[in-house]
Image (cartoon, rainbow, N blue to C red; front, side, top):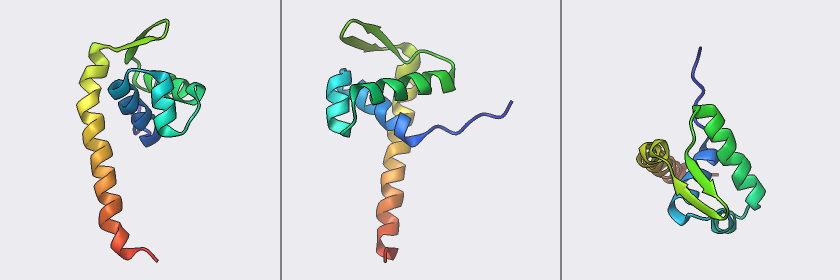
Length: 92
């Protein structure tokens, strides 16, 4: 079965939620609704086949799988920012 490539928007939602520990704060930072962030996380968890966060009421804690993904997400998002910056010299 072919593996799907990780979606950058889902990764950004994941990294932001992991950093802030709050769906409300993540949504605010990303200019999204809480529902949109929640859906992005659920979709990423479905894509990966594992839980990335434990949710207890308003509390969110990262799981071991989420902790394993977090440094990769940071590298991927940073590289995407660098690629955009490198290509900015060619913008019209």
